[in-house]
Structures are given as structure tokens and as C-alpha cells.
Image (tube, rainbow, N blue to C red):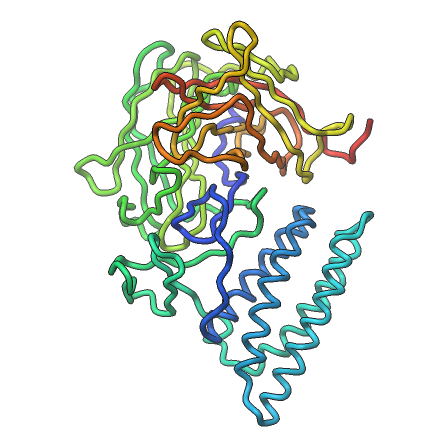
Length: 430
């Protein structure tokens, strides 16, 4: 099992974050109309990159939203263009790009081979966009937009300015590629671990050190809060059968954080620090391993398991696959339903980290993680309750076996219910 613990950064997550206030897993707010030419270009450039990612992931339905972002920004460029020859050229080129966007939209919605048909047309569209870029300064085309974490509609072009509403420091705005799946950024942070060798059944105190690329410490102020916390620590053993979710607390040493947990399995444990650096506004997973004197257990249970019982309640997981196999790069709607010991619908799910449930899936490759939240109802307060069912969208970027955990809170206690499923690499087959 040594290969399971090779460090890596190919991690995937269900995420979206228009503004840091929303966090890395929340539903994005509606994109406002750009209020300047640099902001318009920022929208165009980010949306263009997002479409590249969506085409690579075969998420064709989300392409339309990115095209709409670009169309609105191009209209801002048209409205600002002067009446001289240069301005006329800008209006003509922007207008033609908007017209061509309609064709791209039709191709992206094709019933068959949408990606294959869209990719060459998209490449040609991007080449024409390059011609429009020549009418602007590079600093304008590649401008960054900065927003307030608490007031994301307060937009600035200078990172050193403060929020005009509350005076808070600004962070870089990032536009989501998808409300279903967005690959986290490559890790820009480094995490080191200090811990005595793990022993099954014994509580372990773990110290982690988070640092920037230049070696300076990562303080809490350097991170954006997502789902009520700035650091989510996902923990699992080599057999993927002992999942823990902890929130490290800062120590007196800058950049150092501590958490405790009790492993139930032998061997080293892998940890994924789920964070969003304020410097980038992009979610990352920083990976490290907690050592042990014993060897990790292999994954022996690869059975498909879509139901489970815990503390007298039954949890049922269903996917709307329409009788087909689950395959990579496809969105599948799933539903988890909860019932009590008598089979009655359970409606006592409590808010936990800003949601009524969290689902985390670990792929057998030891790298890929999916962090999923229900897309239906969200808590309105700590006294709010929900159930018996909640829906979510499942997207697997990597084939293979997944151990998926449903995390809920009942009676003030967090509970983790395991499921198992395998995602195929080929096309859907009945």
C-alpha cells in the first residue's frame, strides 16, 4: 500500500464560488453587469478559461452560462466604443463575436457529440477574440477584479483599496466554471505534519504547518471562510473505511494549527486540507500523510453499497442513472433519504457547517476527492430542521471505486454513513 500514500495534487471537488462570501462549495450569486472596461475583460477572460475547462470535463450544459457572461461583457465593450474608426472596429468585432456565440450555444446543446462539434468552433471563436484584444492595452485585457468578502457586489480594480461599505480588505474575484463540478486549483500551499506515530484506538494530536510558496506562514486571515470554517480537514485511512472531518485551530506559532482525532484502523492516514487562499480565491486541497509504525490496510471492500444503518436510522442512496452504468465526466442526480427504526420519514436533520448534509467521496487512487452538498434547501437558522430526503449532483472525474460518506448532525452529534460505488471509464451501457 505504499503507492496509496504517494503525495499528489490531482484532486477533484464539487465546487463553485462566484464570490468568496459564497465559498468554495456554495451556489453562485448572479453575475452583475461589468462596471468598467477592465472588469468586462476580466469577465471575458475568466469565462473563456471556464469554457475550456467545461469542454475538457464534458459539462456541456454549463457552457451556456459562461457564454452569457461573455455576451454581457462584449456589450459593455460595444457601448463604450468611440465613434472613430477604432471604435467602429471594436463594435463590429464584438458584435460578430456575439452572433457567433449563438452558434456555439446551439452546438453545445446538440443531442449527440456536443463536445466534438463545439471544440473546433470554440477554437475559431477564441482566435477571433484575439483580434479584438489588440484594440486594448494588455493591462486592461488581463485586469483583476477585487471584491469584499462580505459585500461581493462592491468591486474594485486595485487590490489595496478597501470595501466602500464596511472597510474590509479585498480579495480577488473568481467566477465559477460550474455549479456541478469545478476542479480545484493546483496546490499553491505546502503542508507539513508533526505527530507521534498513529496507533489504532488511541487519540492523536496532530500539528500541521501551512506555508506560502515563499515559505511564509499561512494565517487565518490569509484564508477565505467556506461553510463556516477556514480549514476543513478530510481524513481517511488506506482502506477508505475510517473517515474523519476536523477543523484545525491555530496555535501560538504563525501558520501552525492543531487538531485531534482517534484512528480506528492501523497504518498511516492521509489528510486533505480543504482551503481557499484569499490571494487567489480558488479552492485547493493540500495533501499530507500522518505517519504510523504499522502498515496501512488495503481496500478489500469494493462492493456497491447504496444503503446503510446507523444509530437506529436507515439511509438510502439512489442515483438517477436510468438503468445505465455510472461513468466518468457525466452528471448524475442522486438522492439520500433518511427513515427511522419504524420506517417513517425522518425530518430531524440539523444544520452542520451551513448545510443539512455533506457528502464526501474518496477514490481508490488516494488523490481524487469529491465534496458535495445538496442543491435544494439550505438552513435558515440553527433551529431549522430538514428531511427526509435531499438531492445532489454527482460528477466523477476519475473512474474506479469510491467510498462515499454522508455526514449529518442529529441531536448535536455528527454522524457519518458510508456507501460504496464504482464509476466506469467508458460510455454508458445498459
